[in-house]
Image (tube, rainbow, N blue to C red):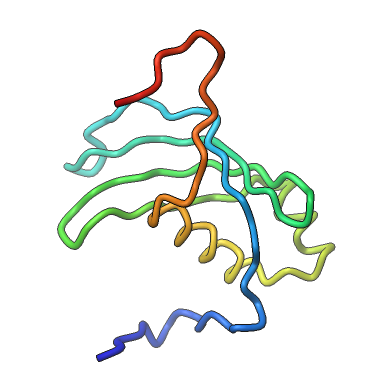
Length: 113
């Protein structure tokens, strides 16, 4: 059974935005909303350009989730490129939930476990 949310745009096979995700900073966990959340800052590389975002990653009943928010300058540039922002953000979210991202570790820092 393939249940889809009728209020969310279906991902078009023609719009598989190919991007690489990098996380620059991962804030400490907090008890936001009664659960554990991490605040992230990072960027997506799409067509050789950098698109910064912030995100909240959290785990709840039903599994892990992440809510990325593109920065205003990223939104403006993506609009100039005629990118579907909703589908781009959905692809960004999916890649992050599935762990398809690189954590940038500052030189001399201890990697997270």
